[in-house]
Length: 254
View 1 (cartoon, one colour):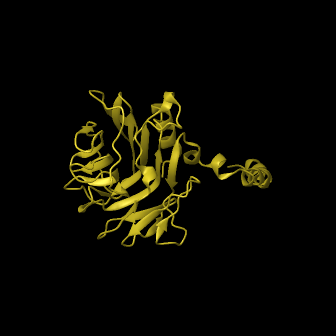
View 2: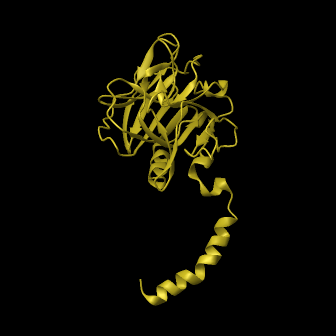
View 3: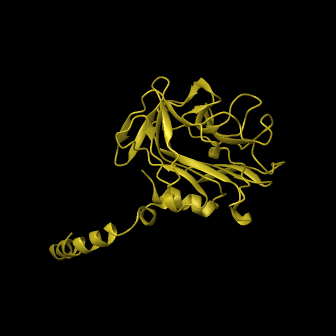
């Protein structure tokens, strides 16, 4: 950079910072502006190890099992695994059917996602984001198994509709993972901008299981805990468009 350019940047910096400081959180953060947002967790616990703060305004914090330490690599994140360490919530509001009355018909559905990094390839289907219990208490879940990632929903707690698997074999690398349900239309998984979709026989609604909503565990099973990191975790009672999902990925790359 030449001296003149450096001078101009230095001169304009205070003005630009002053403008930025007047913006609300929702104007700065793409996640806060998502349609149908239920909850959003950045991955920073703000010094409170008992819960992960919800930044959506819905007051839906996550409780902590074990000790999920907060890290920072340019962005805040939380460690999962390393024993029996994961987050969950018993809040009934996570039992979304995908047909919420307060959502416009044009965007009804369910979308959940996050940036996630695995320390090692899971040998069984571990939970990334899940509200799904035993064989008669299933709801929805993003799962990572030995071959990749997939998204499933259940309409009655037993039968499941599962997206094709998208491979994400690289460990120690951040992946942007999103599961999306569109009533009577599709169950889809997005991994790093690539989409796989099931369109046959899709139900109109998702079952609301008794099992807690969990990040880092699946099926109410401590053998299905993800070992790795997570950040920018969100869930929306709406079907985000392909374009918006891609925009989120591009603008939030770690």
